[in-house]
Length: 158
Image 1 (tube, one colour):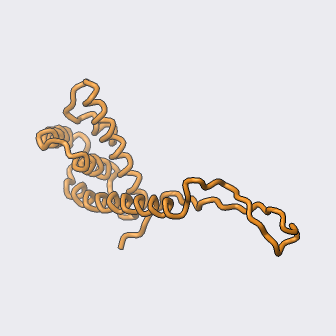
Image 2 (tube, helix red, strand yellow):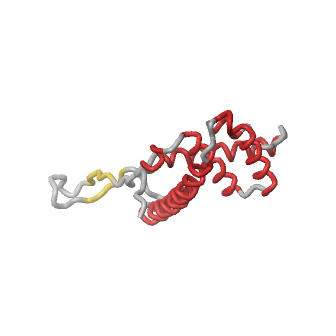
Image 3 (cartoon, helix red, strand yellow):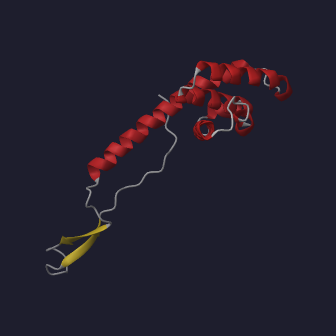
């Protein structure tokens, strides 16, 4: 759905507009991926989640209001064909997606700060450590000092 909705954005074919369109597409896809983490979206139409994601992406990127209005009128023109009669559902999805996006940004910043604090710039995957109490008799012993890697996960909404 999102790809088809993005094609309704009122942009020309010049390079700058293609870059903006690509940025909107990537951000809206990220927002849709975030929706997978919340059961709330399971009960919503995929087209509503896609449209809410694009509308939020337009807000985040801060496009001129005239472009947003033109996009919205393009959507309204085809909504009977797509059975997009529930603007209520789209408007219900938007704040939840926005909250999830903001939360993911905060989490990302916190994880970056934590990594910076726990990993020195000269860190390597293994380092030598003297262990007098082992059977190495004062010889260097290899110990692993790898940083803990965490994959992005779905946070719980408080």
